Image 1 (cartoon, helix red, strand yellow):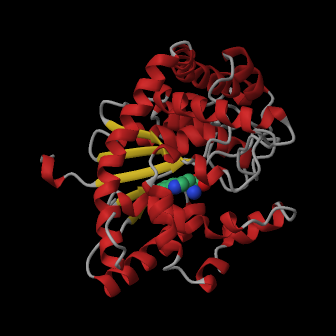
Image 2 (cartoon, protein in one colour):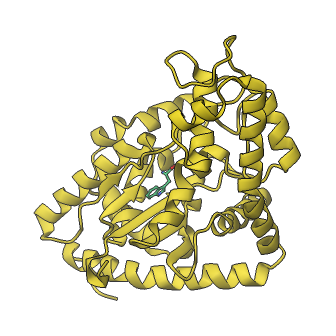
Length: 332
Ligand code: TRP
């Protein structure tokens, strides 16, 4: 691909804790692949995470450990700009200007706001409400063409486009309108209840694999995965447990569903569960090892996130300056 034709992508992940197998297969692994074809920027959305009350000492550790997880998953600081949102003040600065260009009615329609307000009824803070304006700033600062996100963030991206095109209309062309990039995402379900998305908050710890689980733990959790009362390993409506295991196996091995069915013909679920556990454990082994190495080398991590912040700030500042000028702020 020619250098000047490369599109810009940006994505972010909140530092809520160690990534699950679902986060990894559905998102972060794709980021590592996409950095080959795009100008890519990836960030830890720590300011977004403040919309929920955090325990400060724990939060600080988690931000660093999530940064290390990104690198462990293959996001390469030499190929992408990898940074921590709060290290680049332009995010909060543009976030404010965009909040002033976003309507109360628009924010009120965000389904994630409604869901989170219901979940945290004791802390429906203003940040939770204006969250999409900050997310719009994250994206628009880098003039991103594409934003890889899960379906749950699609509405925020549409709002970003609305705000950007309105701003462009009033003040003249300023922002690139970003497109959502919904990857052919492997949606990974709980091993304990395959109708629910895999989540760290699963009440049953066997339902969720994290990317730092030990190989033995991974194999054991897969052995206990909930399936149905049939025996054939095939992808079919209603076989949610098996479908989920096949999705995981396919995502890790690259095999098609038909190939998997053929390979496990006559072998039953027990063999299949053991095989899925094995391939996942082996696949995640280097990720876990890289993570441990990185966490033992804090100086290197610090160097990476400082370099990332510098690179990000340089790009972000150009956009912020333009915006400040267009809205009529007096240059400092
Ligand atoms: N809101 C996203 C989430 O919770 C995280 C995020 C913050 C993000 N800023 C972003 C994603 C910008 C894409 C682009 O998943």
